[in-house]
Image (cartoon, rainbow, N blue to C red; front, side, top):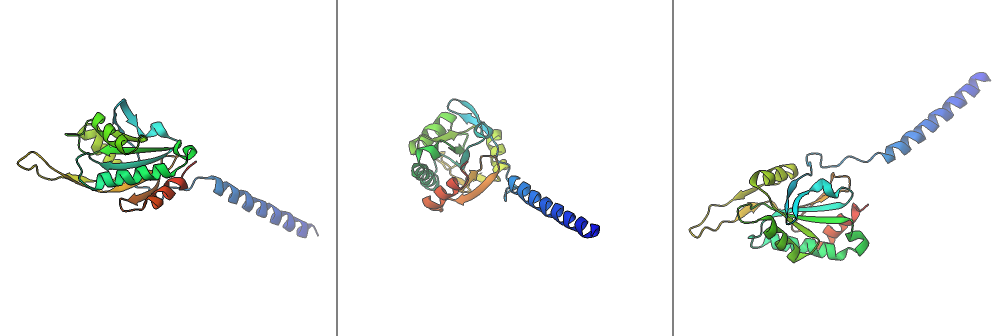
Length: 194
């Protein structure tokens, strides 16, 4: 009889332990599926230094480009602007978007800022010196390569066209391409809102 009671008690303890373990596992944040991305930067904005960690707790959108880009950059920034417009005011308060210039020779922080806000007032334009930009690109595994300068001193830059969506905890949430629809981009943003 005592053996049966001991087994019942042991069974109850194991069941309670399993339930508590399950609850605890649900409370632990799931790791990012993009561990290779270390979303971070400190760059220069119109008003001074801006660090990605300054906006911890918000969803952050990051796009690398340059102001002289003839097609993909303005199209992508327009898509980001439309996604921001699709959010309601309460949602928009928890979203920050960044346009990071990869062209420090032609894009000052002021130029990058004015270019970005042309598309939407909530897109923060950033630039910096070559080293700062390379560090930011390395953190996002973003790449670019300048074409040769032509006889008129003009050049273009080949670069990836990814839109990075960073969760409020600072880990990478999702990555969209420049061909992602505005609806896809909006849904990716909303998915990670606090």
